[in-house]
Image (cartoon, rainbow, N blue to C red; front, side):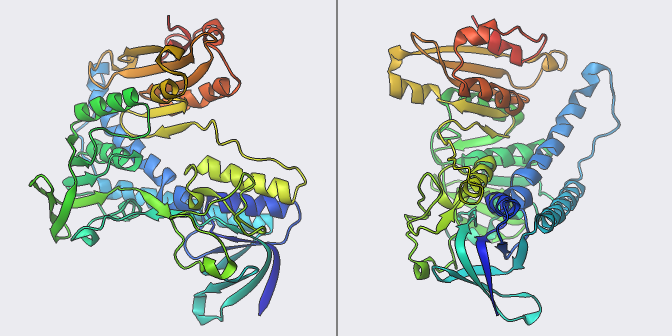
Amino acid sequence: MEQSFDLVVIGAGSGGLAAAKRAARYGAKVAIVEGDRVGGTCVIRGCVPKKLLVYGSKMVEHLENAPSYGIHPSALTIDSSQLLANVRTEVDRLNALHIDFLEKAGVTLIRGWGRFEDAHHIVVSPTPAGEPEHRLRAERVMIGVGGRPHRLDIPGAQLAWVSDEMFQLERFPEQVVVVGAGFIACEFAGILRGLGVQVTQLVRRDHLLHGFDSELSSAVQEGMLEQGIDLHFSTSPVAIEGVPGDLVVLTQTGERLSCGGVLLATGRRPFLHGLNLQAAGITVEGHRLPVDADQRTNVSHVFAVGDVTDRICLTPVAIDEGRAFADSIYGQRPRQVNHDLVASAVFCQPELATVGLSEDEAVARFGASGVVIHRARFRSMEQALPKRGPRCLLKLVLEAGTEKVLGCHMVGDHAAEIIQMAAIAVGMGATKADFDRTMALHPTVSEEFVTMA
C-alpha cells in the first residue's frame, strides 16, 4: 500500500531528526525512515558514548592525583567491561528518548532501509515480521543517512575494529594498536591509555590532527607522549595477522607489533550504499552528495544534510542544516546556515578546541606580516600540587592593523567549554581591545585570553 507524505526523511540521525520534527511542527505530514537505531552517529556510536568513555578514562587521572590533595583512595582497579556496559545502557535510554520525541512531534517512524524507486517514491525494506515493503510517495525528500567508518584495504583488515565497534566490546584488551592521526584516533588513544591500556598509534604523516593549527597539534602530541602513548610517525600498516585477541600488525618499516586489538581510525565516508540514487537522477560527486546553500541537490525537491554532504561533519552543523531547511520550506522563514565560522573540538587528552582561522590559514590569507599572534603556555593551577600533566596552550590569531580576532584556540582541560563562549565574541567581530577590556575571572585558565600582553 502506498502512503503519501509532504516530507520523507531517509536517516534518523541528528540532521534528519531536526528536519523531521521542525517540519512536523509547521504542519507538514512527515515520515522518517531508519534501518538502524534512532539517534544517528552522534547518539548511538559517536559523540555521546565517546565522551562518556573520555570521562571514565579521566577519572583514573583524578584518582591518581588525589594523594597530592591529601586524599588517599583505596587500591585502584579498572573494569572497562562495567564502563562499556553502563555506556550502552545510557545509549539505550537516549535511543528510546528520541523515538518518544518523534512520536510527540507527530512524525511517523518507518523501520527499514529506504531506497529510491524514482524521484518521488521511496521503497523501504526489509520490514519487521515479514510485512510487505513500504512504498512512500514524497513531495520532498531529505537525505540524512550520515557516514560510516572507512576500513583500510590491507590483508587482515577484517580482523581490526572500526570506531563503531569499539562501543560494543565486552572489555578493552591490555594492548591496542590505533591506526590514524585524526580526531577519532587521538580520542580513542587517550581513552584507552587513560584506562590502563598500552597504546601504540601509527601515524601516516609526520604530525597529528592534520587540518588543525600546527602549534596546537604539537601541544596535543606533547601531552599524548606524556600520557604514555607510543606514537610512530611516517608509519602505516601493510597487513594484520593472527586471530581476534592475539594480533600482529605489520608496518611498511618492517615492524611487527603484537597486540590484543587494532582500531582502524582512518576516516569516514558518506553512507550512500543502497539508496539507488540513480533512479531519482541524483548527482554524486566522489563519495558525497553536493548541495547548494539551501541544502538542495541537483534534483529540486531532494535535499541532503549532515555528513552525507561531507561539507562539515559535525552534529550541530547537521542539526542547524535540518532546521534551516524546515524553516525555509515549511515555516516561511527562509534562512541559510553559515558554514564560515564553526567551532570544533577534539576530546583527546589534552583536549583541543578552536574557532576561526588557524595561524597557518591566517598567514596563507593575509601574509606573515598581516598576522599577529598572542599566546600563553603554562601548567594549570589544578596541576600545581600533583606537579604533573600537560601544559595548557591558549592562542589568539589577530589581523595586523585592525587587531580583529581571526581565531581563538586552546589546548587544555575544558577547552571546548571555554571556546564555545569565545566563539560568540569571534562571531561578533571582536578585537584584541575587546578581549583586553573584559575583566578577568581569577584564578581561571580562561582569564589568560583577556590578559595576554
